[in-house]
Image (tube, rainbow, N blue to C red):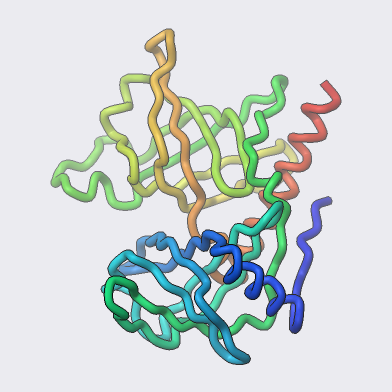
Length: 243
């Protein structure tokens, strides 16, 4: 069983201080009209009640009181929490975002975000469907969903394969809903994701889709999904080591 470490009080301030000094990368996730958006930030400063983040990316869709999930990449760990936007201000070429200080932060080892192959003796079926089919197209696919095979899994994303004939329905950056049952005795996992890459196989019969999971830092439901993913990744790792 994988346990996430919970930080509070002075421990949170220590993380923010280090993130500010090291200019650690920060990934923010938030929803706009039912779709996840990703934003790269830096920690600029913090006080007893607010964190100041900055970005060079325009933030027209980020408004006051918007819920937001935060993931700070620092050393061998990722620090996760959800917050609320206090204000969004333009400061020259930078946009400054003020967030509420979290009451707790979850710490996860970064190795859990390294892809773990599905054990060789297992065949894990993946069902997936579009969250907004090809946003710039008026065409809708005839299929309600597609089916593939899970190849590897981490706390942050997955890779699966599907028949080459279906490749035309997918593109990098596309939103996908994904469902799979990682172990036969477990309940299915249902996740939001976006496509990071498409890669054809040498046999030209199948292609690989690499996806990144979205929204796992934003709220209790996402963190519960993350906990389940951490447990599955640890189980896959143990099974692979035994082989």
